[in-house]
Structures are given as C-alpha cells and as structure tokens.
Amino acid sequence: MNTLFDKIWDKHVVQMISDGPIQLYIDRLYCHEVTSPQAFEGIRARGLKCFRPNQIFCMPDHNTPTHDQDKPIADPVSRKQVDTLKKNAEEFGLTYFGMMDSNNGIIHVVGPEKGLSLPGMTIVCGDSHTSTHGAVGAVAFGIGTSEVEMVLASQCIMQQKPKSMRITINGKLAPCVTAKDVALYLMHRLTTSGATGYFVEYAGEVVRNMSMEGRLTLCNLSIEMGARGGFVAPDDTTFAYLKGRGYAPKGKEWEKSVAYWRTLKSDDDAVFDRELVFDAQDIEPRITYGTNPGMGIGISESIPSTDEIPENGKAGFMKALDYMGFMPGEKLLGHPVDYVFLGACTNGRIEDFRAFTSVVKGRRKADNIVAWLVPGSWTVARQIHEEGLDTVLNEAGFEIRQPGCSACLAMNDDKIPAGAYAVSTSNRNFEGRQGISARTILASPLVAAAAAVTGVITDPRVLI
Image 1 (spheres, rainbow, N blue to C red):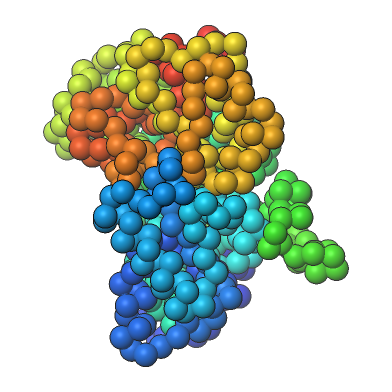
Image 2: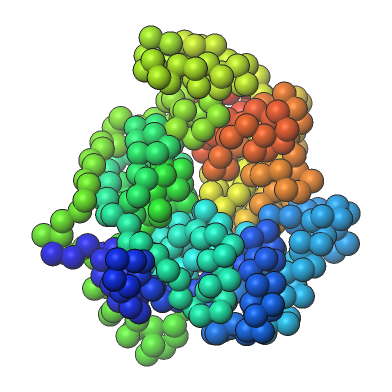
C-alpha cells in the first residue's frame, strides 16, 4: 500500500529522531553560485571537508551573461559570485562546469540531460525549482543555504516528511496545448498555495504521453503550487531518454538499473493524503494576467471580473492588475507586447526550441519585439545548430544567445525594462522578477512564438 514517494523516501531514511525530523540521505547535491557561498564558508570555518565530493556538482547559471561568455563578466557582483563558486569547487575537490564548458548550462537542465539525475534518487539544490528533476522519477526538492552546508558536510539533511498528493490528468491534450499549459492550468485550479505541504505525483494518460521535456516542465512548476516537489513514475519514456547519457549507468549496470527502476511505482492500493483528477479537454493554451503564476486564464478567456473574486482576495487582485496595467474583464488577445523570452529551466530545452521554431518558420519577427532566445545548456545550443533551427530562426530575424538563466530573473544583464510587457516561458511573474517594474506574462513556447511574430498576444492555434 505504498506510494512511490514512500518507497523512495523510506529507502533514504538514515534515522528517525523521536519527536523530531528525519535524517535523510541525499544522492545528489547541485550547487550554483547564488545560494552556495555561505554554505562553503560554513564548512570551511569548521575545518570540514565535503563528505562525498563525487556526489556534488557545481555550475554557475543565475549570474552568467548570455553573450560574450569568453570574456570576463562585466558586472562586478555577478563576476564575484561566479568566481567564488569556481574557487570553492576547486578547494573542496568538486566537479565544476564553468562558463564555456561544454557541460555548462542551467543546473536543472544539465542534471537530467547528463544522466546525473536518475530514478529513485534523492536530489537537492539551493534552488526552489529543483523539483524539475522529479521528472525522471526522483524525489527532488529545493533547500536553504544552511541545509546546503549540512549536505556538503554529511551528505544528509534533516527533514519532516511531506504529505503525498496524486494529480491525475485524463484524456488527450488538444493541439497547441503543452505541458506548460497543463502546469499553468493546475496552478490556476489549485492556486499558488493549494499543494503546500505535499509532494505531488503526476499521473494519468496526459502525463504518460508527455515527452521527458514536457515532464521536466511540469515538475519544474510544482513549487509554484506550493508543493515541496513533484515527480513522475519512471517508465519506458524515462529509460529511452536516459540511455547513453554521460553519467547514466552503462552495460550490465544499465540493465540492472532499469530492472530496479521498473519497480518504482505506486502500488495499486496505495493511499495518498489527497487525490485530484482533471480532464485534458478543459485545458487550452494559457497565459497569466497577474503577479503570481496562479493568476492565469485560457488565452481565449477574459480576466475575471471583480464579482468573480472572493472578497478577501479583491485587494490583491486589483493591486496585481494595477501593476500589470490590465482591467477586470479585459481580454488580452491582441494586447501589444515588447519582449519575448524563450528559455529558463522551465522551457529552455530542445523540444521548446523546436516548438518555437515551428511557429516562426516562414514568418518574420515583429518589428516591435525584442526577442531573447536562450538555450538551457550548451548541449541544447549544439542540438539547435545540428538540427538547423538556428538557420530558420536567423532567417526570421531571431538570434540565439548563450546558455544561462537569462531573463527568468533579474540577476544578470537580461533585464526587462520598467513598464515593458514580456511574454515569457519562465516560471514566475512576480513584481520585479524580470526587472524593476517589468510586466511578465507567462506562456508556453508556442504562445511566445506567436507573440514574437505578431507583436501582440496571439492564440498560436490561428497560426498553426
């Protein structure tokens, strides 16, 4: 009667503390430049070494520029962050994928594509979107800097066990409806706190039919519902994706691993703390209108009227609309936009670039649009070139930038100007997230591409 979450979690319990937290063993720790400096300083001050350095991988992504990466970083704060991570990795004997390294990229893109993230693992990183790695069938979640220090020193962490939730999505997705739209729909239905305290298992026909890239996008956004993390039981899609990747098992070890991974599923009679079921036919391409990812609508719908908002939520609703420059009841189709961003750990994979290119092909970038197309890794950048997507995009007036978190968050040069509207494939639309007073509309790569070639919010179904 065990859930998959129970099976993975219980296997990694080192000890239970009476009336306290659980000591949980961690298989993989990822470190980037933003949340790790104080953790390294902490173990240095205590005269400690990393307990299992071979299980720790470091790479810069948040502060890296997406152009001229072969030159010193111009911004002194970003340069110090990146340089500090490199020094810490060298001092403590950790694997480091620096800028211009062929293995570099956004840490949540690189982990799965290198086969570092594997089914049945426990994976942590000082970053909330660590839930991305759950797509391979791992228990993956973000942790704070003090917890990063704990894992560096002991390869363990103290945690309370979350509750379990299963979200089942039945049916088949309509054309132009992507994993991003599914996630935005779930965030709208559950709100940004509806899964607080839970670890979510995604199931149902829609999830089974998703590619690994789609599952990575879905799991990436689990945190935006308040969940501790989200994951998908590994299956043949998972195994086909991982086979042959750099750090994945090889030869007999591969066969042995797959045999074990096939056991990683919830029992038929498993009991979840909460179960939710949704229907694919209720989901269309989606966009956000507010300042949290749950404030979204189907692209053909209107922003809710004030009558549709509970009394205790009206002040926040109107504050968000005032920031965004929208009105209750307004339709957003045809609304002019200024920037389009394709990338981030949410939608910076090769499948996302293929989708974007499928809309752009034979068309031209709108003159009023500034477009930032940023691969999630150097591997994705190579795939874009090998498949000729860059040629199609260049002919349409677009430029491929170098890998990094880019305009997902205002920690590097790619900032959206104040007051400008950006249709973004990233994960958060908080006030100031993409730049001071920037206005973010979250969307899928297809919706982003439609805006990029029309200059306004456009339903991609009219272009495909």
